[in-house]
Length: 243
Image 1 (cartoon, helix red, strand yellow):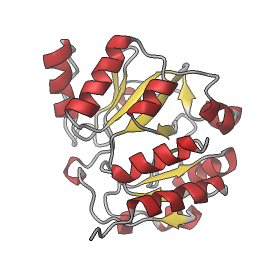
Image 2 (spheres, rainbow, N blue to C red):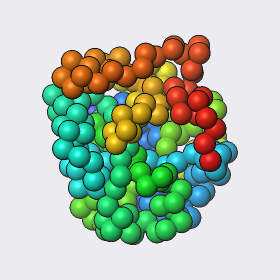
Image 3 (tube, rainbow, N blue to C red):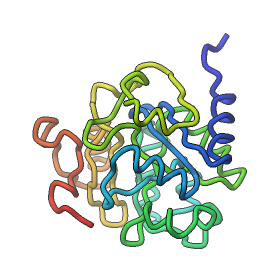
Image 4 (cartoon, rainbow, N blue to C red):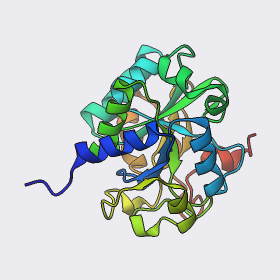
């Protein structure tokens, strides 16, 4: 008998988001918060104390990525190899369909806070719950956007009890699935702009992503300088404080 009600929990999260709420839930790369409208995303953004240069990511799947992003075939092959062949978590950044129904429903202001330079990040393959949530929400025309469930600058949280009271207070639902899979990395997802092959964030499973892209596609990604040198993994922020 299963100890987790993944379908039921996904239903509860999507219902909360559709009602204008914020959800906190587990992923393999740490606890995250998600919402689906400008008011809820703003509430979550403020609770985190997040800088205006930060961007939300779309919760998705391989199918959602291929429907929303407009990346070239080679880039899609890379992402598919990472997700399908090697079962690795990834946040893929790329140009997107501006007319996609899920993005149009999000609204211009919230979309502007979730995109940069004509690109959008889509998180995928970070656990059965996130996949069920993203798939269910997309089928019902509900966008899901968010970021890590933590105060800015305090690091990814891999246990529900580590999520700060300020974040919990703004959430309409909090799901506790215990310690998450990639907690030893102490970072969220690896984030790559597949239109330029720029590493935006070095995160969980980075060395595995690096190896797959090198061996199968001849792509050389920079080495991880380590947690001490780059605790958040944000390469782009370390190189230039973009606004």
